[in-house]
Image (cartoon, rainbow, N blue to C red; front, side, top):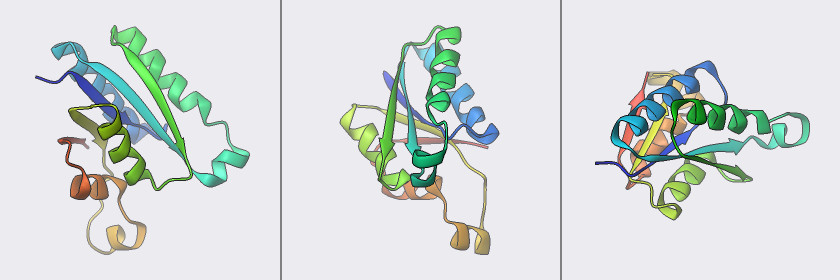
Length: 127
C-alpha cells in the first residue's frame, strides 16, 4: 500500500499526534518514514530546533520504523513539505491540523490546508 510516508512536525503536542499516527501506519504496512521540520526563521537564530527531529527519529526507532530526517530553512512550510514529498518519492503525507475554520484560518493561515490544496501526494490529516 504505502512505501514511504512523510511526516511533518514542529515539535508541538498536536504535531506529536501526527507523528504517532504516521509511525503506527508505517509500522503496520512496512513503510519507511521521512520526518520533516521546516525551521522558522526566528528559531534559526534563537532556538534549539534539532531536538524536534531527534525526537521524531527516536520515536521511529522505538516503533521499529526506518526513519530519515529532513530539515528545511528559508522556505514556506507548505512548499517545503510538498517539495520533500515529491523529491523523496513519498506516497503519503501524514500531518496534524488545529482544525481552525472561518476567520481564524483566514487570519492565521493553515499549513495543513495549503498542503491539502496544492499537494499531488495523498494527505492524511490527524486531529
